[in-house]
Length: 419
Image (cartoon, rainbow, N blue to C red):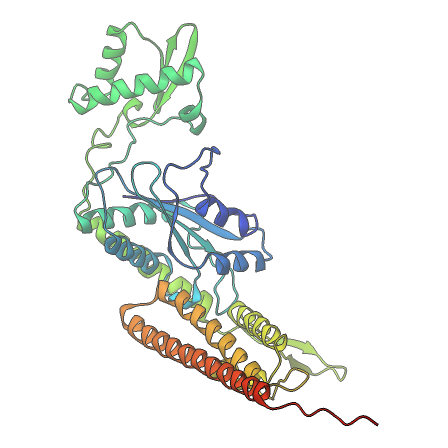
């Protein structure tokens, strides 16, 4: 498995979520296997990304498995848990929003993720993949840790040579030649043909490849009138021939991974859990006073938006909203819609409130821990029972209305006497 992050996202929330869940890949081709929502709530992720005012709005990446690595669903959940433990820096799951989507269209599983760049408690910008070589090393070591844990083959570093990023994709003759030559050099290196750069140069000359220049860090070869500069460890004057050998996740590497994790936890704790310093302003009398601060987290804003939507839905039916809202979302004072309410309207209001709560529980079950699942399922059962009782109550009410109509129909009609 290989863990990799992409460049920070600057678009709105719809673009990354639509791409991960869409039926077309980055080339616009139809996916052979449709993506599957693995963990998280796409709508919440989109809303959070759209609420961020900074230019850098989200982090995205992938945990890519090889063809011979076929983790079970349980193992993939364990890997996601480990990723969140290492990358969230000690922040609890309710403070970081993450969306996981499973892709299988390449013949091997890929777990793609999107993380809005915001801590839901403090509202501060959160970056789980900051720039720099240390972060790249941290993700590489995390992948090595997962491979070691599940007994998968380690990913060996490919540092016997260096090609420019464009040369990996270019279809020009020089780029194609350099890729083919490097591949052949790699095969010979693996067999032990090269002990140092002198062996490599002899091999090049034997194959009628002219070496034009030998510098400390590179060599220049001449091919078809073109001068190609070759970089990488094996082209150095004094190369480290151990580079490129099979990678071993030894105790030193494990200690380095743990050091990075502890360092991230300490930094996140200082950044996100330290109370903000009070802001001081000068009063007209020249005295320094503390300016009051009103702070509202993103999570609070989302909750208020959900409550407002609930109130609007209930108000359209009629009745007392406060009587049917969940306890934790009841307003401090009575909030009623205009007009009275009948028994049927009360039943409808209760059904709306219960259905909203039921949908909320279903979303929570996606990311719930085993200890939380039992509690949520118990509440879900109680809600289903309550909905069933309301349905029965509606049927009984309808029966009583039918009885009234039947009695009215049987009642003899008395004609009024003519005047």
